[in-house]
Length: 178
Image (cartoon, rainbow, N blue to C red; front, side, top):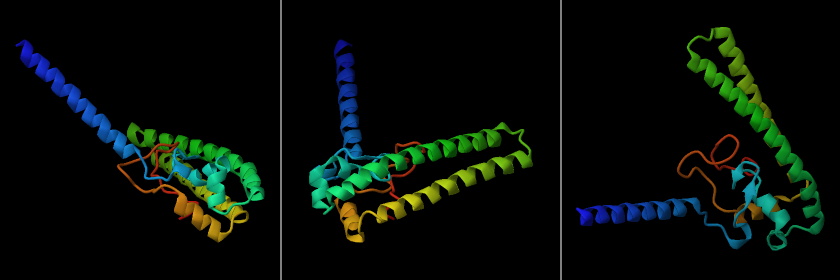
């Protein structure tokens, strides 16, 4: 009986370690050293992750051909972008939660559902407009070639194993460069 219990405990421990190893492997990105640990305003490798890394790592900026003056401009611009996106993300999240609660309540009338849906779509539209505004502002600082180099140097993005981290738990796609 004791041997059976010990075998079971060892089996569970091995299974746990294997699960942790697999989870760790999926959490890693095949990023070069210049972009290891980059974080954008949307969370890990979210929108702007490569640009934030550039303003923190002179070697990455140099590799992308970005001047000190451009880095200074980005250092002024990106924190504002981050705060604007956080505000819009919170507004979108609150509108989505409100809409979801109304839908699940089973007691909401059509007018309140339509109003909540409009609030949500307005928040999403404002957020997308802000992405466009940010893209245009960044394009005034970086050339198309520099933006292409940033994309080339950045870690792979995409849809991975599901919803990603960040304020809206969205996929890791980067609308700044898509």
